[in-house]
Image (cartoon, rainbow, N blue to C red; front, side, top):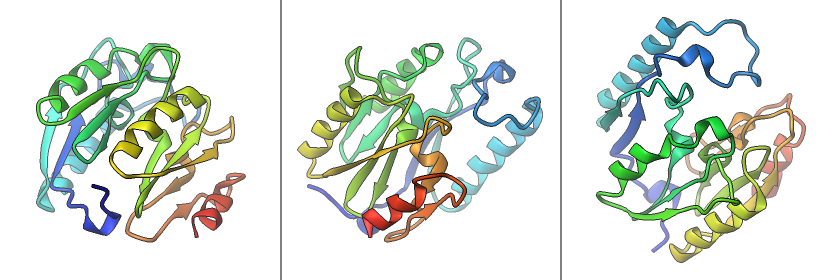
Length: 200
């Protein structure tokens, strides 16, 4: 049965260590200079520590040398109550990151694996109040959205679809929902404000 944002208890989190080859990660959307692996590892450790300090049970999967982007674990699985959608990821270099995520989450959740042809990154999904906002982007196509929406509907959640500018990686790059009833858009991104207006 569907639950609202405020009813959800976030007591567990799945994370993944920074890859030893993080310098080879897909970074063309950021362009802020060379990747500092040591700084990235320190930031990740602080993130995990902050979660634990706030009572969250955290599982940390090992980083993968073959998948430089693997630390962005939210892209490899989207949890919907007692289910998890395992996306067919949008960039070829990232396909394979899902294996360990599927194995871990499949122990306690019903797994829905997205078929080839449909594609999605979890970064294009935001849970807002009683629905999912999904971005149609360079990483997520309509077939992927339709698959995800079908699973969400079986759990009682509708979805709303938004176009993500080609200059932007994911929906979560331009918008986030830090607490119930709140959407925070990126002012400088075309279309981000309209998401907030549409969701009211």
